[in-house]
Length: 72
Image (cartoon, rainbow, N blue to C red; front, side, top):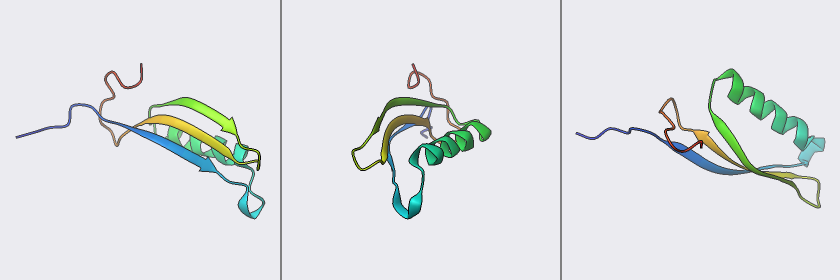
């Protein structure tokens, strides 16, 4: 039998300016949702693109698994 002892996702997300969206506001709402759900996360990199979009690289807890060693 096997079990997952700890897990983490590495994501690169792009928050676009399509449909008059505010990328900074979208990112803040995304972080608030993670906080509300008590999902652990670490932002590794956040940069603004020339077209106004926001590219964020983050490590995020996968489901409710432990994140031993991933969030250090």
